[in-house]
Length: 97
Image (cartoon, rainbow, N blue to C red):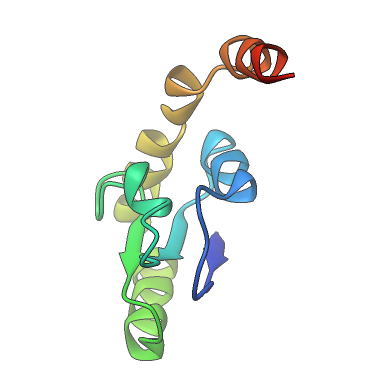
């Protein structure tokens, strides 16, 4: 499982990498909205309100105890590889520089 409890973060590379590898992903829904751009809550990961430690606990417990839920969000998370393929991202970096 990948867990990130940032109070403020854009699109996290480590989150994308974890999703691409199929880790069940639980992250805070930061005000800047980076995770919200990628995570569909309960579909390919879990979004938690910033500072809600109880919700974090419950989400982690659900991933551990509910194997079918963990598998479902893991399988959906790997689809991030289709959205952000390395060739596409590399090309964008080259364009910037």
